Length: 141
Length: 141
Image 1 (cartoon, rainbow over the protein chains, first blue to last red):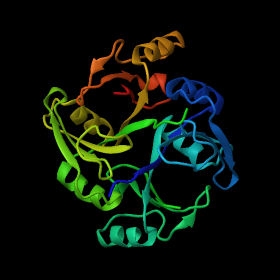
Image 2: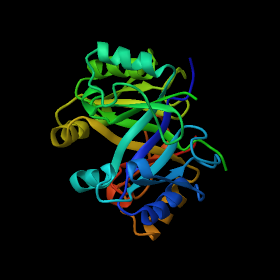
Image 3: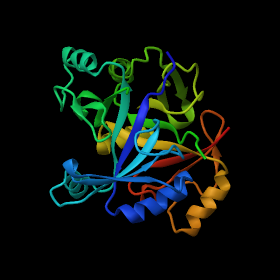
Image 4: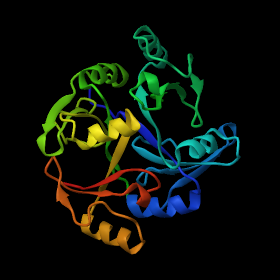
């Protein structure tokens, strides 16, 4: 087994334009892909290191800003401020992984998979189940 | 430009063995590479998705535990608890990147590069300079 593990890292930011300018400088990727996810009330700038489009290739850095005061990201920012929000890792069989975690007593946010913004099946593990990390599981597409 | 951006994500954990068991399950990588870094007073479990050895290939998940009460990780855990600690991204020319960041007014932890645990040149950017994220820059080796 030697496959990519990290789909992306999500960073909660207050102002998308300001944060984008800094991460263009940091990553050297000057063409982030921008997508709005009305369902989650967020706007996301996706740095993929030059891979075109959202969701194409792992290891992405995603800046996530709220588009509304009742967005989960707005609540997160109010409580914790800007910073690392979650990591998303790939799994081969998401239902089986959720079963394994449940059997091990890990607390889940999503008991069953749902469809993420990029069309893949995803589920969130509660930080209590992954040592303080809000963890998203994404089924390899 | 289309190159890997994320070297690794560092997660601060209280007990390495317990956390390793959970991340073996989460990542499907059942052979993490374990390394002690006396300099930083930490022990690290490196999940690379099957790539052999430390530092071989990016996109790694690294669990970091303190080996002493005065380790920076012990202090972090006491203050914030377990969770996402830092991300490390690759840069081509670390001195030039530090110059760029300084010129943009970003706060740095390391004003000049130092040698990291894996022999590469690294430097930390203060969270105030990267929207709340403790960010490590690593020069491509």
